[in-house]
Amino acid sequence: MQAKESSPFQSLGLRPWLAKQLAKLGLKGATPIQQHCIPAILSGKDCIGAAKTGSGKTFAFALPILQKLSEEPVSHFALVLTPTHELAYQISEQFLVAGQPMGVRVCVVSGGTDQMIESQKLMQRPHIVVAMPGRLADHLTGCDTFSFDNLKYLVVDEADRMLNGDFDESLAIIERCLPQSRQNLFFSATMKEFIKESSIFTIAADCVEWSQDSEIATVDTLDQRYLLCADYDRDMVLIEALRKYREENEKCNVMIFTNTKKYCQLLSMTLRNMDIENVCLHGFMRQKERVAALSRFKSNHIRTLIATDVAARGLDIPSVQLVINHMLPRTPTEYIHRVGRTARAGRKGLAISIFRFPRDLELLGEIEAKINTKLTEHPIDQRMVERIFMQVNVTRRESEMKLDNNDFDERAQNYRRKTWILEGKDPDEMEALYRKKQKEKLREIRRKRKQRQTESELNREGKVLLQDERFKDVNSARFEKKYKRAKSKDTSEAN
Image (cartoon, rainbow, N blue to C red):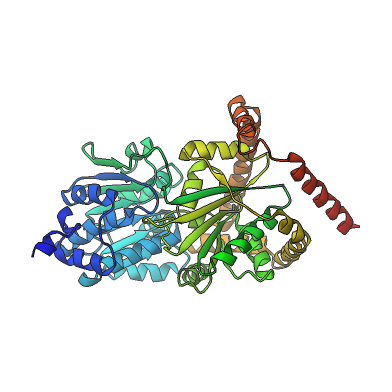
């Protein structure tokens, strides 16, 4: 009896059956966010929880929901909203494994599959619905075969992204279909004021707020490093860093982040043509392809995953020991989410970010200011980078030609149109709106770039870093030489 009472999860108010199931899953103790939020949720309070990635946020809301569900097993008991397909499936898996003794039923509504099949699953009285807001809003406006009248819990995961305005239209539709009497639970990696002030999902004034107090935004088990490159040898630096790491850590999983869907596909093809086995993950892939790619990576059949930011938030893959930023994220916050894919739950991890010298020093300064940590240089053999320069260049160009032959842009457009048709929207109107938004986004990127160049504070940040001990002895000519060599090779190949 004493052993049962000493269970860390039972001391939070969880039932013995849940504590026993967590022990089977290998969880020996509760994390800080679980310790603070589980009792509050069990007591009926609204809750806002913020903690670093890998801190156990999902179980912080899943466990009390499962306990309350076991006491009142009704359909559509809880709704979890999340921004990506991959995160939706991961959350559903965690509900299923923790709630296995009570036979919990979970339905994922995330698009990428036939909407009719999703509708049938929603009609089969699931206990928990995990959804992306756009697709759920389509179901709520398109049919009346299910309802959330029994709903007791609304969870907004990755709340800093979900409540920043991008999803407001869909969230407003969802809110109209939910009962007013419910508990609202907002969870995020970072605490933002607008989370509490959301005009769509109003949270109680006496809600419990808990944030992990730390001046450092990343975990202390994460080793964060940088690599310097010129404009034209980023791929070569990446491949050499990956090759060297693989020599010493053959069985480890690596995630490589880049910024665009097209370059994600291109980099995957280039590495594959250089005998580096990998899978890629981006928004233009079919849902079956995305699930299959992630499954192969999680099961260790393939140990390198190349992804856009669809994989940057929430994914928990314990075997990831290295994250490489092939292209830098656009904001320091996204950097935190990316590198948070490793060094999770107390494990060690390494993050390497490739910076173009000197043009990316301003962004490096912003990242270091955000995380309150200075990155250290990652050692690399520059002779090997130069040796593989031509091979990588030729391989990448062959991959580019193959990608063009496969009409990637046209396939991407067809994918968008098919998605809009399935959602009951006019594809021509949506395509025009999409192109307009892309132009606006491009103008905004250019505006911010120009602002960076003119704002004295940011310029000062980059200049200050040039005087940093880490960069004082950097031979700038080395990067200029690579630039000139690349230009001369381009000219000779063209001739």
